[in-house]
Image (cartoon, rainbow, N blue to C red):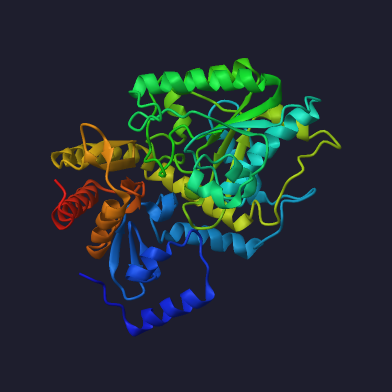
Amino acid sequence: MDIEYSEHTQRLQQEAMRHILWSLGHYEDVERSGVKIIARGEGCYIFDADGRRYLDTFASLLTSIVGHHRPEVHEAMLAQMRQIEFYPIYHDCLTPVVIELAKRLAALAPGDLEVSFFVSDGSDATESAIKMARQYFWELGEKGRQKVLFRRNSYHGCSFGAMSATGLSWFREPQEPLNPGFVPVMAPNPYRCELGLGPEESARAALRNTEAVIKWEGPHTIAAMILDPIPGSNVGFPVPPDFYLPELKALCDRHGILTIYDEIQVGMGKTGRMFCCEHWGLVPHFLCLAKGFTGGFAPMGVVLTTPEIADVFRRPGHDFRHGHTFAGHPISAAATLAVLDILEKENLIENAARMGEHLGERLHGLYRHPIVGDVRGKGLLRAVELVADRETRQPLGSALGVGGFVRDYCYRNGTIVRNNGDILVLAPPLTITADLIDEIVETIEAGIVAAMRELNLP
């Protein structure tokens, strides 16, 4: 069935099309079903401008980790506004709420990640970490260390430096040539290895490739390697074998290469630990957070680093040459502190671990349908990859648009599901319950059955 929009919503849609060019706008979908006007949120639900309710299975693009409409967060933001709504953390000034947040993060972060560099969003976080790593060596007199390793099929942001470290060709192509000095290496993929290998063999090959690239480029020319411990939604959260990340960290350490962990998608409790790297007991030199960092209540991100690195930039005349006016916004800081309080008081990270297990078990039941090729993920970050042939892993033809069909079916039936081609990706709020997970999986299953029937799939 098609959704019928009110005259009010149709007017908003027309005005949007005329006056707004929005982020990653997918105009093929807009042409087919119109702009979706989201007007309100409550808990795990959002409501469109006509009052229709939708279960939000992707937490507003991995941001709304404590759900929508939390009065305690609103009050914290309002209380900060009553003090001072904005003053930049710039030159020689800071605000008390930002200092409080930095102290809180130092207590939460693993290892010696005790120093915060606040930014406005995820792209700024990864861009800042890259620039900090390069200037760190420049300040130490190792000015030849400028290169940055990144993994193929990764995503690290849309600013020019972050995009240069992004390994998605379709995303890079319109802007090439990008910044020099960014060097791709193989990423392990337990299901879609670029060499057609199994999970362990893929990870071993990726390690050998990375080591070979380091030797070829010369360790003395490489400042850092950036990676997401679990790759993000673009490739459906493929979890590497347990040996891969520790051995990769050891490899970088042996060659003096700084490690940047991009946890913008996978951090803040979604995997059942506050930080994804904690599953492997690892501590990078830089840890990037955004998206769920503020619970979606205001824009903010952070790069966490060590005192040893930070002290290089605290010497007079050696300051880190980067910053934005609204970085470290006090209202965003107040929102983040309130979100951290909610995570602790409501034991939401523990809930994410429990509900993640339940979600994984329910999704595995989808293997009863032959087009379900792989179910994967960790905690509440899960993905279902649809295929033409499970045995050979043959992809479905892109022209069929099966993933889009399932997504649209779910939307018409009151559930927001995101797809990347034929990979369905889930990342619900950490407040999710077992009953809501059951509802999500049942709706997705009904969408898969409908796709098989309507598109004549085996």
